[in-house]
Amino acid sequence: MDYVFPPPPQVSVPIVGSDGFFPVRRVYCVGRNYADHAAEMGADTREPPFFFGKPADALVPGGGDVFYPPATSNLQHEVELVVALIGGGASILPAKALDWVYGYAVGLDLTRRDLQQRAKDKGHPWDMGKGFDQSAPIGAIHPLAAVGHPERGAIWLKVNGQLRQNGDLGQMSWKVAEVIANLSTYVALAPGDLIFTGTPAGVSTVVRGDLLEAAVEGIGELAVRLV
Image 1 (cartoon, rainbow, N blue to C red):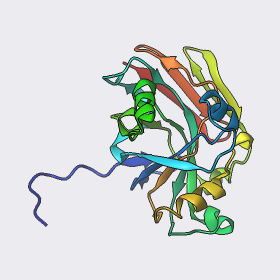
Image 2: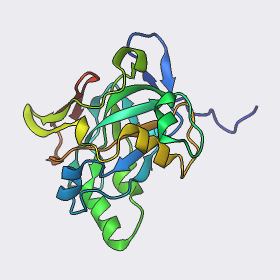
Image 3: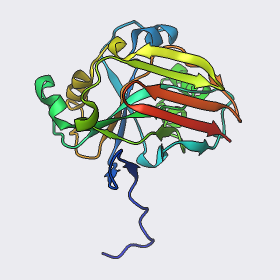
């Protein structure tokens, strides 16, 4: 097949214990999936899950240096458990949803909060607040066979060594199986999809030069320097 210019390379994420890579199709994110974070954002503590997306090339596999984005003066961090799918479909039953999980990773949903808030106030889409370049650093994926399905465990983030977010996966309003099943009622899921599952309370503003260290118990750590 002839292209008018070379197509971009396939976005992929390293896999722990393997020389292979996980090819990424789509990136989905769950909004307000921890009651304490929903409360700090001024929302009900439990509401039906809602979703937004990030482009696959917004991922920063392995973390490291991340450029502070333009057009914002309020960049905020959100540490999240990320689900990597090896199967999918439409209208998946919750009892079958975990069958399609390949593994898990630590991720950061970086957010231009001022742009997001202005979009909310006007009823506009969140894309420019959430889906900008390098807005989704992600650690290596841990295969299911190695880590199982984490239902509880610490999820935390430090900025320059100071603890900012400190929650537990057990605090999720909607569990991983419920998230997958609900999302599949809107779109057909497929191998290569990633789902960022939401963040606990404690999101805060970060600036150039800050070191962000994030972790999910049993899944690993991820470090990002804003440059």
